[in-house]
Length: 441
Ligand code: GDP
Ligand code: MG
Image (cartoon, rainbow, N blue to C red; front, side, top):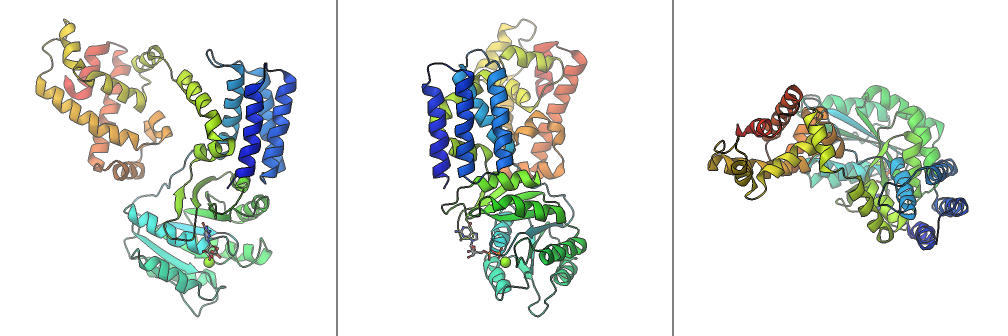
């Protein structure tokens, strides 16, 4: 997959890296190379122009951060622009205590039924209780296919073999599941024609009876440019909240993924990489762009840029003491004080603090830090930057991801909040306060 795009973008990058100096002409040339590469990979023309316009503007006007060469900076900009378009990794955000209804949209053959059964298994494995409604009335055998695939995951499929009206099947299905303690109901729909009016009208009726919490658009990754129009047409009928690109195991160029994402403003959440039930992967924008650009060539550049971006300790300490600490800062402090042997040594070297912490408290603290490390690692980048986002469904997800109970996640958040508030109040009576807030005072 993506081979053509990968090599042509890779060549464009090599040209930059090998050049003796960067000037306007070279930047224009890079822009042209990138345009050609993206167009060949079925990325929509409008998008291509947008990306390269930003690329040119930024490459010409931005000064690289100290320590990063002009060439590397340009590679980094190209990477940024492509990644921006795809957004961050995104998660389901199920509301607890209710049946979250997810409707699958897409034309015939895009892979909806396959995705329904893949997701049913995937979510069941994550601990969610899932039900499926099969409302594909068009294809004979669709219901049997769905039932067979869901059977192994013990997920019930509701369907009505002799009913040809999808909206009424959905309605009956929702009624059927009404009293069951389900977290998620997946609704598989029919998609007989390409973007045709009567398909969209039927979708509109299904939308009205379903009132979905999320509409997922399933797009065949091998169709290229058409992705954009298809996604746009569906999006107008039912606002699309996430995209799944299927068949990325084949020789699909993958540029359509960028197009579908752009047409709907929704992020790609998962990709299908085969016909088997386990062939579903979480979509990683970084990995995807890395593949587009030929990661080998740019990994070193990105590493360097990242290191330079990582703020020095001064900046971090300033942020912490002004009460604007985020979850990363909190963990950084925890780690600092528990570095092997450092806590006791640190305390002894500080006249005001020696004798404050007993040995068993140090051990307790270290246990805690190792638990919290897993919990913090299960948070997304946004959650770490803004822990206020941590609502109960996110907490549930993090608990599951980290393997610790929800209570422990809440404990961590409580400590983080205390710590932050006290910093705000005391504005920097540093070490002593820090230790106390971490449960050591
Ligand atoms: P629907 O009409 O949208 O429900 O599409 P189906 O789920 O019935 O899939 C249509 C065809 O595509 C079937 O033969 C599937 O096995 C195949 N398919 C679905 N997803 C993938 C995938 O990720 N990779 C490959 N290679 N085939 C897939
Ligand atoms: Mg189907």
